[in-house]
Length: 120
Image (cartoon, rainbow, N blue to C red):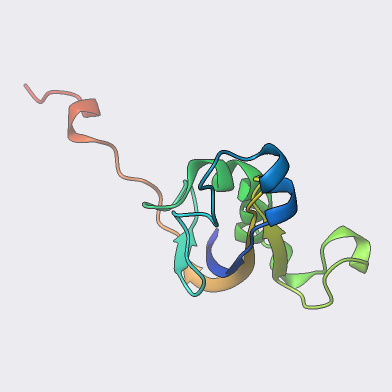
């Protein structure tokens, strides 16, 4: 398994929909900023939006397990192998991200000390 680089390409805001459905003062996503980079493997990266992770984790998992050598979706979506362009599920202010397969090996998570058996 390899790590996947997640780059925030842009944050968007649909002012027309927000005017009709959003709370007063709603603006672009306050959590993610264009240019931020995260690395993921087994779990959501620290500081990454929970809702965005729910929207993209399947793609991260696929790229981490070697799909990066091929094109996604039968070659009719993204023309670059090892890349996916995805977004979060926020319909008023979606964040657009680029996922890239890397050659950085992933390390299995270490068990927490409280989970280790007591030695006698």
